[in-house]
Structure formats: C-alpha cells, structure tokens
Figure 1 (cartoon, rainbow, N blue to C red):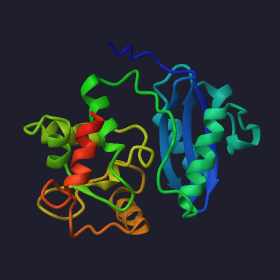
Figure 2: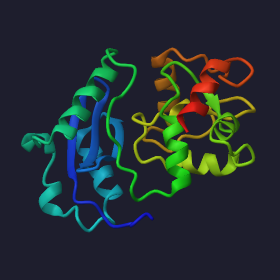
Figure 3: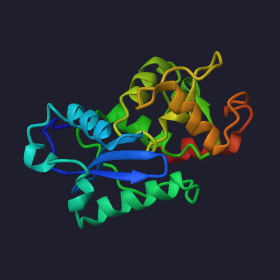
Length: 210
C-alpha cells in the first residue's frame, strides 16, 4: 500500500542546453522531475513551491541556487543529470533510470510503466494507453494518471495525445508549448497517431510490458 510519507531525497538543480532542470532523487530512484526553465532562480523557486508540502525538504537541503554547487555524489542523481543532458543535446532517445513510485496507487504505476515504453518519436492516444493496460473503458482515469506523472520526460507523458486531434493539455512546465517543442525535437508526427491498427508491433510491446 502507498505510504504517502514524505521523502528525504536529494534535491538538485542542474543546467542543460534547454535551461535549468530540478529533481528530487531518493534511495528508491527519481521521485520528482521538473522540465527545463531558462532562469535558474525561477526554476529553483518553482521547484521549492512544488515541494513546499514535503516536510523533509527544509531550508538546509534547498539552500541557495544553484544546488549543483554542492552536487551530490549519489549515483542515481549523477545518472539522472548525465542522461537528461544527453537527451537535450540530442544524444539520447531513451532513459535508463530507476523511478520511485512507492507513494502512487497501483493503477497509476501501471499507467506510468506502460507509458514508459512509448518510444521516442512516437505518439499514442489516451484510449490506446487504456487498451494497452487492459482497461479499455478507463481512458479518463488514464488521462488523470498521465497528468499526475511526477517525472515528465523520464516517463514521457508528452507523447500522449487526444483521440480527436490536437495536442491536448500538458501539466509539465511550459505547458502545451513545451509539449509541442518536445514532440518536434523527437521528430514525432502528431498528425499520424500511434494506435493498434497502425502499429501492432508497438501495441503488442505495451501489452507484453504490463
């Protein structure tokens, strides 16, 4: 059962070619990730606000920006920084990182694990994802799980589009403009959605993953 207990993970801020990212990484893996923002001060403020309800992230841990000035030796944090930088430099298309979902419900974990299998450059609909986890009538609940994803990019919620066309919403930093930018960067064809009829091989990979 999810404990809902706050984490005492390392809170880090680091620069990429797209701007400044922030994350919290604990013993169980990446817990929270924030997409790049141009200003390090703004990135720090937004992440501080995001974690304001977490009693384990006090002023000592948050400190002043950039937090990378006292960058943790923790291997998981170092791997996150390296892989995210590689992604935004165009040198990585898939993340190999451990993510900590202990506070999430079993349904959300199932959605996020399936979503993690959507390859770079591909898109699918909320309905496709619902079918992929064996819950074809749960598209709305799947949408809620996608919106609640605490590690955008690492778990690529930007690759999920509405069935009716368009980009839909995006709860990550930068909103829909960032979603479009990420999809363009990955070379995704947003006019040709990945679905069961058009890509049975990938659809099967989603089924096999669950």
